[in-house]
Length: 324
Ligand code: GFB
Image (spheres, rainbow, N blue to C red):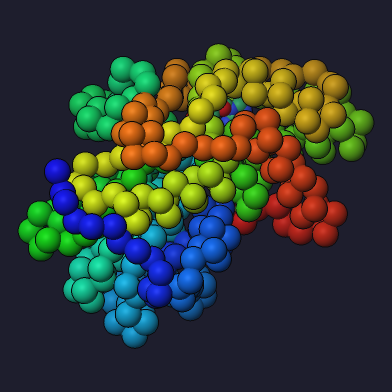
């Protein structure tokens, strides 16, 4: 057990890598309540896959703390069809930021892993100790490998160089600034958009990928950002820690809930040519609960807020897809 004292973010220079994405922008909202200087670097200024550029940027800006919320992300279909991007981009982003942070003497770094790196057949709810104890879910193995490499980098720099680098594992997240692209996004933004547009266009049917039977747990991104700040200040161990949600739902049940929120009354067709992915993915919350953190936003409330955000963007004729 590591006995380092709390790491206060007050008065620190904090770099949110990936600030424009769904998680990064929620972190920026959450960090607005902390008296700290927030650093961001847009993609056109800094390509995180470019090692020299990352070293230069960190050397020039000297952050005390870094949240690594930048990643090439996508839903089940994007993962399946773009393996090279998901593996290469994510390995490069993680390796560049973590190594440069160590060289520049960054005091604290948090890397965001992903629940999809737990074994497909892991016991549920999934405990942190399950990592690497079985084969990955094949639809996302490339992304999973990259995320595991990043976790191991944090652990290796902690062991060899005494760095206070930690890795956390968020469950499936959703909320404002999610990727609403129908082919590359996750299930919640895809269903919100499909149902909203079908309702507006008077269409009587939408497709739902897979059988609708898989079970998932979701966490609203502002709750997730709150957990990340909480852990940045209080958690300092080599072991990964789950950032779990509260409510488990089947994909068919989720679709019914989104239909009620969006006012969509048409048919839902199951497109079983598309994969289901993990049959069940629910994280064990014991470790983070024991530290005193729990989510406050229900799935229903989070879905309502997300739909409201989506409609505000749609009315601005804004491109829905922002991604990270
Ligand atoms: O959100 P999703 O892509 O994430 O899919 P995963 C969740 C479930 O929803 C799957 C079904 O069973 C999908 O088949 N689904 C139904 C849909 N309709 C749709 C749709 O229109 N779009 C999408 N995307 N799914 C991801 C990993 O797995 O989990 C990522 O692929 C990432 O790497 C993320 O780690 C957290 O939970 O299946």
